[in-house]
Image (tube, rainbow, N blue to C red; front, side):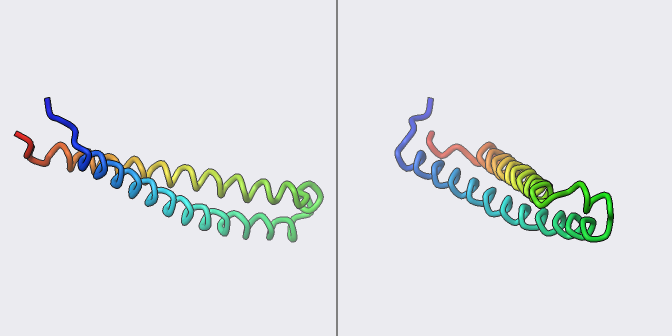
Length: 100
């Protein structure tokens, strides 16, 4: 059994914070991109299509755009955190054991 030191716990905590920060930043970038990619066709269709003009009030338009942004944020952030954790667990399993 290996003993857990304060330094190793601090290192793991710093790594977890970095991974979550990377996920938040990637998620925010994905949300911005999804907002633009959804807002343009939504607003254009409301101006050009009679059906959309009649049935999509401003609340519906905002709901369409914000739903796409929220989904993109969580999907991209989740994938980024999982990829980072996978990379770090592979790094940890391939690292030689120096405690012995």
